[in-house]
Image 1 (cartoon, rainbow, N blue to C red):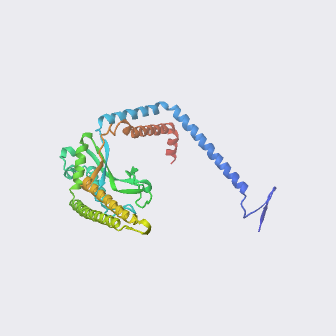
Image 2 (image 1 turned 135 degrees about the vertical axis):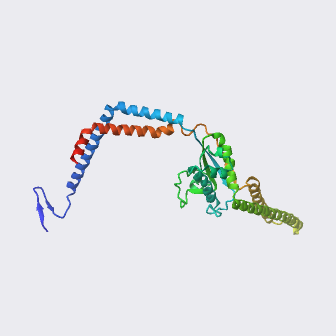
Image 3 (image 1 turned 45 degrees about the horizontal axis):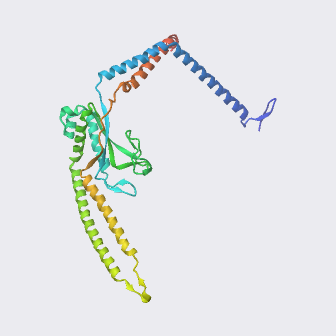
Amino acid sequence: MSEITTPNKNVRDDEIDLLDLFRRMGNTLNRWAIALGRAFLITVVFLLKRWLPLGLSIVAGIGISYLLKTTSASFYTSDLVFRNNLVLMDMKTLRDNSGTTSEIISKINKLHTFCAENNSAALSQALSMKPESVQNISDIGAYWIIDQSRDGIPDYVDYKGNHSAYDTINIRMQDRMDVRVKVNSPQDLNLVLDGIVKFIENDSLYQQRNRVRLRQNQELLARLGYDIKQLDSLQKVKYFEETRNVKPASGGQIVFMQEQKTQLVYGDIYSLYSRKQKIETERDLYKGVVTVLSDFSLPAKRDNGGMYYGKYAIPILFFLTLLILIIVANWGNLEEIYKKY
C-alpha cells in the first residue's frame, strides 16, 4: 500500500490524522465563536442607536393594550368540580367500568361547540336559560382531573388535553371532572351552574342508570340490615351457649372455652356495618347523576385586563418596528440585491 512521506512523519493514505482533525474542528469553533460575538455586538449597538423608536413602540403597545381593555367587553373565568355518581370503580385498576365520566365530559363539551359557533338558540335550549342570558356566556368546557402517583388526591386539571390515557402512573380521576366557564358577568355563574346540572340530569339514559343505582343500593341496605340482625342473634346464642357449657373439672379447676370464636363474629358485624354506612352515605349525599364538590368561585378581577392584551400587542409592535429599522438601515444593500437578481 502506498505511503506519503512528509518532513515530520509518514502518513498512510487510508488513515485519519486525529491531530489535524481536532485542529480543524478547533479552528471552525473559534470562527463560529468570533462570528457570534461580533453579531451580538452589532445587535447591541444597533439597538442602542435606535432606542428611541423602539421605546416608542413599547409605549405604543402599552397604550393599545389599555385601549383594548377599556373598549372590549369584560369576561371572567371560574371552575367547578363535579362528582360522577354513576361511576363503577374497579379498586384494583382505578378504572371506571361504566365509562360515564368520559361520556359526561363529551356531553358538556357540546356546550363548548355551541359557544364556539355562537349558536345561542341551541345553548339556550340546552341550559334551559333565556336567550338574553346565554349571550353573556363565552365558553363552557369540561376537563379531566389528573391524579399523580395514584394516591387518590387530585393534583391538576388537564386543560390542554396533553395527558396520555396510557399513562399508568399519572391517571385520570374517574369519579370527578372539572368544568371551566367564561362569562361576561360573574353574577351569571349561579344560573350557568343550574343550567349545566339540568343539562346533565335531563338525559334519560343517565336518569335510568341513576334510578337503577339507587334501587340497588336500597336492596343492598335491606340485605345488610338483615345479615347484621342474623349475626347479632348468632352472637348472642353463641355467647350464651359457650357460657353455659363451662364445666367444672377435677380438683376444683374450671376450664373456659376460648373467647376468639365469639370475637370473630364481632368482626363480621362491624364489617357489615361499615359497608352499610358507606352505602347510606352514597344514597343520602349523592342522590343525583352528578354532585357539585366545588362550586364556582366569584372572580376577583376580569381575565382580559391590560396584561391580557399587552402580551400580544407589545411584542408585535416591537418586532414590527425592529423589522422596519433593519430594512431602512440596509436599504442600499437591498436595492443592489434587487437590481442584481
